[in-house]
Amino acid sequence: MTRIEELVKEQAEKHGRQRTSLMPILQAVVSSERYLSEDAMVAIANELDLSTADVYGTASFYTFLDTVPRGKYIIRVCKTITCHMKGKDEIIKTISDMLKIKLGETTNDRKFSLLQANCLGWCHKGPVMLINDEVYPEVTPEKVTEIIGKYLKKS
Image 1 (cartoon, one colour):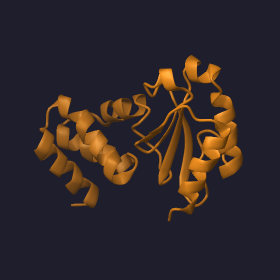
Image 2: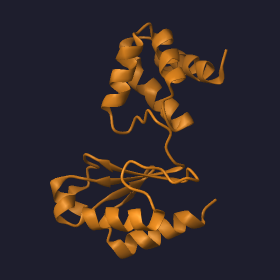
Image 3: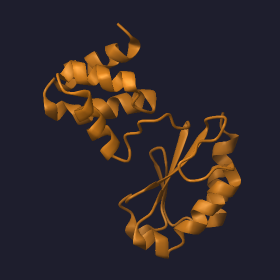
């Protein structure tokens, strides 16, 4: 049994093997592996007796369930109209220039990925940036430069 199969089995024991267990198992795999590999989705389908198309369809629908490898630090910038009006394009440009990547890309050292999110739930504090689970409200290009600088110094 592979490590992924063991992880999926452990999560199925914890959450159950019914269709409603799919999301918590997908989230647990992403939390552990940082993305959902094809092998992981097949293992989940087998464990829950679902089609792989059903598992992939669910995984690919949700923004936070990555189906491709991402960086250690996943930067998500809110793309709602509110954040757009408050300068999210400047934020994305600042991050892009700093890390030398475009939206949807990951740095060569696999340290950072830059993505947009449909809504981060902080419209009253836009523009908003999320790095992994850390929320950064009311960011400016200057604040972003400082924040990313701190992450660049981390190993």
